[in-house]
Image 1 (cartoon, rainbow, N blue to C red):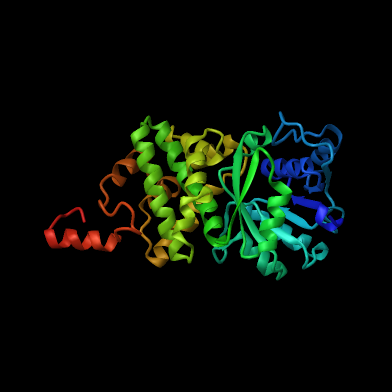
Image 2: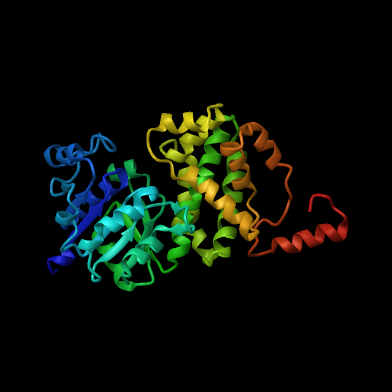
Length: 355
């Protein structure tokens, strides 16, 4: 293996970027990790531990941390970009002088840029013009990955080299990397599920049971895939790890940041109080607003996203919103089997007011 193929750069000092850096080092790759904070970089190099985001996890000692992009990027065959969506474009622009077109760029960020409703892989394309671009997404709670618990993820790219290189760098006996060519669907799945994790956390705080959570997750999957298909994604992608898989873990786990924000809202806290208590970025809060506005603009039916918007940004109490959702239309279960429009037509023909 040539030197450039045997080197991995990770941009971002958060929990998931750190966990992936350690996996690649475990697999024998020379790994350099970029982060802004000199003190945290020094701690990683000195103690092989990320005290801020993964304090109880030992990082492979071969991971070298640096605040200098010029030290981290050149010579790396694979560059993993694990930067929160709000700063993603800015960091890619800073990194651009050291990137070259032969490098493989992979986003691990589950978010959407407000301006132009851009996904992270689209930002990578716009800022670099490179052809080797992919997305890593799936049911991947970083703390469990760090604990080497059995986990699976998806690398999505139209480019076979990107898919193969990521499987080689990150695939191991506890982290399975499956392939997809639906980059847009996989990336939308990762961004959209954050919305419904907030809803699941709210439902739990309100004392709702397993029936409710099951209903919420299933209708969320329908809503996610309906929106994604309107944007050009393949609905079958949502049957996989990046769709239903990621939705299950993020709606079921108190480790999910978005779930914890929803739980605080369900307890009656304001959005500002919920976010402040979390102390980290919860991508779903911004995603609710962006997706709700986009769905309205394009005429996509998304009652759960609309309801969450009302709770987060219009001051509607969570319990009141849950009651209103149950009064909405009773439509098709799986729209790709029985289209929603057909059910509405049935109701019109029979005079049923719930159509």
